[in-house]
Length: 572
Image (tube, rainbow, N blue to C red):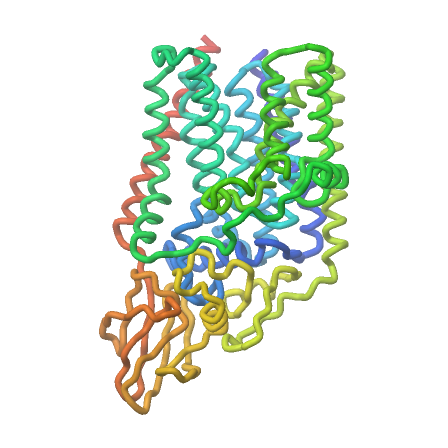
């Protein structure tokens, strides 16, 4: 009877998560358009490029028909494992707008489920707390900022798996060490989504690890070193499909990751609080501020417990995201890595919502109060999401349309950060030039000087020192260039040279030379010639994917078997 009741409760909770996920996407879905800001054009290009790869049975580490069609190798350096699932939706559904929003909805739902199950990983009988935390975290304003304001989709995916990594870390060091598997699985999924988020969380884990060592007076016998070691090894094995190709490519060509090497967009504490009250920009929301106040009240009453440590982590991270923390005094390497201190508010949100969920369940303990609180959190969170969504749509409905542009030689560069687009316009991404901020991220260093930057963006080709316009055909994993020369000369084509290209002239493989702008340079004889510049993913990378896939299948099977064993033990 109890088992049947638990099943009904689980189904009810999952249905609630699904309903809230659908409600969150309705305002955007019904417009039939996407409203671009921030990174949206970049990610739409990537997703459409990956979809083209899936249609052609390829894993496209380099792109010649999207990302401004210059042969970008961004997929070597920006993980795309999870994005492949999103791209698959683009191949199944004929409407790319609905494919995109369906992907957003699935991310919402998965975030709720993972947050819920992660709390239960730590404490089995904390179902009520698990639901409250899932709703608070999943509907947090920082996640809205990532999903619909600036479309920082890599981080959005990473935060879906953040609770799982923390649950695994807790169990390895404090809780049930037999549940160690959640740590490498959660951490790997974060690395699959967004490398920087993975680096930050590893740093946080390292700090906590050394605090733990200090607390036990460096008596390592009190640590479960076996499970720690297993977690490290499994994380390295599972993340090999992103780390190894990245190292392989980085050794071939010196690149620059992003334009900035100093801290940017840092706000003061007062502005951060105002933004949170007004639900503007990368904020922790009204509930995040309430959580900080409640923690301060608890301290004033000298009511100390371990939940305050969670509050303290969230509050310190929020302070660190402002000018109160001396980021500008840090080394250039650290500044270049962090870039935007407000990123840390996502981690602050995690801790603050975890603390707030604990406060709520400690106040509203009666069964009826629990139900009312649950629906109040779901209703308030959904209402805030819905309201902010409508405001975003209202503010962006008059943005310029993303008009298809097949003139790759257009001298005027338009950084199309703000735009709106319907399904027809998004379908033209693979046959149209669109300029976006960050176009040269992960490009060879030689391509970054401003003159080189703009000449590549405008697809400027050279014969000797003279600019010319060859006929170019853009395909998924290669370009075909038709040239007609009056005399033998050096040709400089506007495609980035990373050292892994296959370049052919009239069907014969040739060795190109990198030009002073980091592009393909060739000595071409007199007459008409067909130049093909392409990239084929090495077989060893495919083997790495197959090996990693097998490991994931074994992990899933182990999880299913362990769950079945627990189920049987409860019955018998």
